[in-house]
Length: 112
Image (cartoon, rainbow, N blue to C red; front, side, top):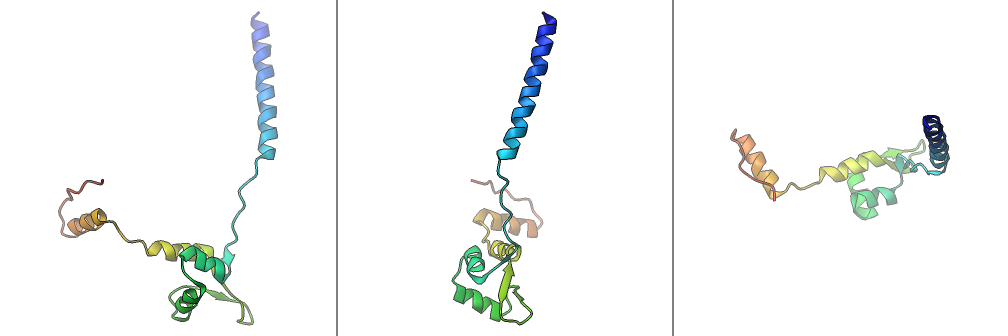
């Protein structure tokens, strides 16, 4: 009887491994987004129009790349995301806590 249980467990384990390997082959890996993007995609990421993106570029407020001829402009996705994230506005409780920390006292602000 114990032999049947052991054999059944081995069979189940082997079956589970086969199923897992077949499923792993069918699961699609997420596509890696391209690091270099065009103006349209860069504007989408930072949430502005292409004309405003061009203004930021001309004022050298955002990093960009030119090809050898200098005619094709591209951006790095990670840099556009970093620019967008740098524009985050702190919540009132975060600003109060920062002010308390700057004054060297402990904050009594509770997050709601």
